[in-house]
Image 1 (cartoon, rainbow, N blue to C red):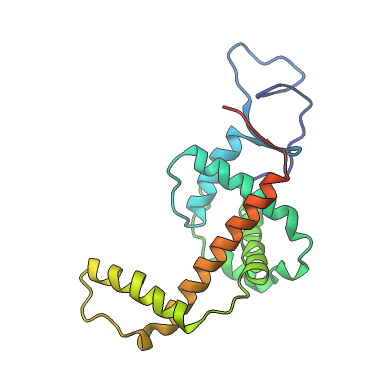
Image 2 (image 1 turned 180 degrees about the vertical axis):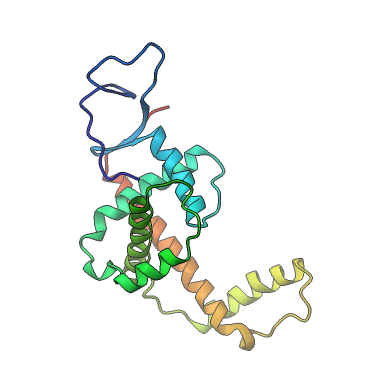
Amino acid sequence: MPFAIVLLLFVPGWIQEPSRPEQGQILDRILAVVDSYIITVSDIRTEKVMREVLGEPAPKDDREVLDELIDQHLIRAQLDRYPRAEPSDAELDEALSQIKDIRGLPPEAVRAAVRDHLRVQHFFAEKFEQFTVTDDEIQKYYDEVFVPAARAHNLTPIPALAEIRGDVLRKVVQEKSAAEVKKWLDQTKRTTKIEIFN
């Protein structure tokens, strides 16, 4: 997942080297430009493999991956303003120790990806997870989300709220955080030049 791609010469939509490639040879295709940051087909392929390596859910299509790469770039642009987002060496080494197969990716690329994920987690925790959650919000989530889901999965007996209050609290915080992240990203995109090529 490169942070910058230097183009020596390109025709809109395609990356080409100064020397002319063999007929029919495609080196790479530009899918999007975020300000001056370029995302290519090879970035999509690499991100798919990286998601497997990191144990993340498979994307439904390439457009989902492209949207995620755009979001990642916008988020990374903010990370330098949050030095506390930097993981410790011990935390980074612990996360890397959980990866058993890097699928042929360069080890330094995997390390950089894991570092980025940890930085983003810390950034979100500091910027978007400082919420006050009320008892009413916890009760509402339990009644309207947890209980119907438990019934749909034939969970019996259904745990009382008091038994799972901590888990429900974490879910409420996660949902509120996700909503704030989406709001922030939408605002950031409105002030960022983003071009997507079909």
